[in-house]
Amino acid sequence: MKVHEFQAKQVLARFGVPVPKSGVTDSVDEAVEIAKGLDGSVSVVKAQIHAGGRGKGGGVKLARSLDEVRQHAQAILGMTLVTHQTGPEGKLVNRILIEEGQNIDQELYFGIVVDRATSSPIVMASREGGMEIEEVAAENPDAILKEQVDLAVGLTAFQARRLAFGLGLEGKTVNRAVKLMLACYRAFEETDAAMLEINPLMVSKEGDVLALDAKMDFDDNALFRHRDIAEMRDLTEEDEKEIEASKFDLNYITLSGTVGCMVNGAGLAMATMDIIKHAGAEPANFLDVGGGATQERVEAAFKLILSDENVKAVLINIFGGIVRCDMIARGVIEAAKNLHLQVPVVVRLEGTNADEGLNLLEESGLGLIPAKGLAAAAKKVAEVVKGA
Image 1 (cartoon, rainbow, N blue to C red):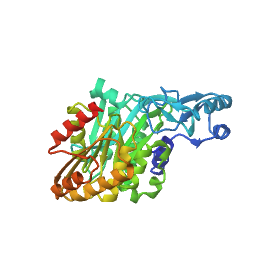
Image 2 (image 1 turned 120 degrees about the horizontal axis):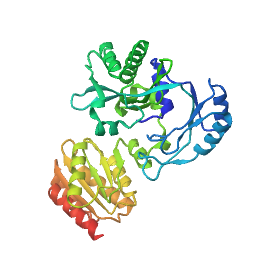
Image 3 (image 1 turned 30 degrees about the vertical axis):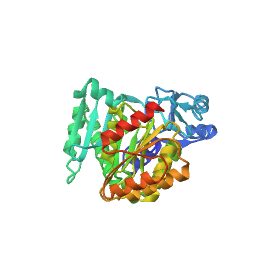
Image 4 (image 1 turned 90 degrees about the horizontal axis):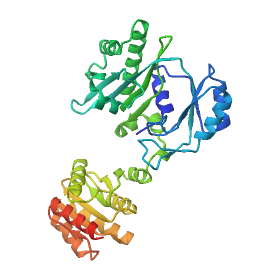
């Protein structure tokens, strides 16, 4: 689950991470009142959306007076902000963050992610703050400092100092950076975060170190332990179909192709999308109904797929291990009847009660197309799409 910048800073502040004084609002008048309460003569007006690159898209503005705060707030609130992460459709800005200006000396990068190769956190830092870390990795990978974390020990002060020295920090600034890094790791670990990023991590001319920007993602599977974080979920930032899918514990992501996919198991879903592309078509979604799918979930999944106007055909690829193929077939049949099926559906069933499932599909009279083998199913659905 993603949260906004102001929410990430609220979480970090609870763990002692220094953040700028700020306030969030959806009102122009309140934005001015917030700015009045900040120290200094400079404020920053920031759009709050779940995407990076806000500054380049015009969503971050510097204000040197209350009049400029009002002007920028009026311009940003309600705008459709387009960045490299939003896609061409952009995102509507419903809230803005009014933040105290800072006396910046250096802009650094700091982040924590889970390293899939070792299944443990890895802490990263770079002198090239303010840039997308993917760009830094591609153009100058040696500029990224890394520390692998032992889960039994956590991030140590020694590792944090090594990162601070690697960033070229000196004197009291080193200790302040170390304290911030250790606090960030505690926040990452104790909130079951999947990603934490501070970009830029600011060093002021006075030697202070604080999170000038912040981004955090949290593990959905652990949100039951963090009700306060779960309440930060902003449904206006999420795809309507993905919200609906979550009600049935379905893993659904909208894509740009024309072949709807319904699969049980994330690995099988990835393989299914790959082979659809190999066959010459494009997947319209990623949808994993899970290993223990019920007939109700299958119906809900089918409705989700068919609600996408771009879908010209559907490929159902089920391996019956825990789940029974005949139960999947009944769910598909009921959904097809209820939705008055208008697009071709290719079905590949393997495993427990596969033959019974295929018989049910053939006897349904709904024109469902059975296929033997994944390659044959992908080829068939690609042919159907091209024919359509």
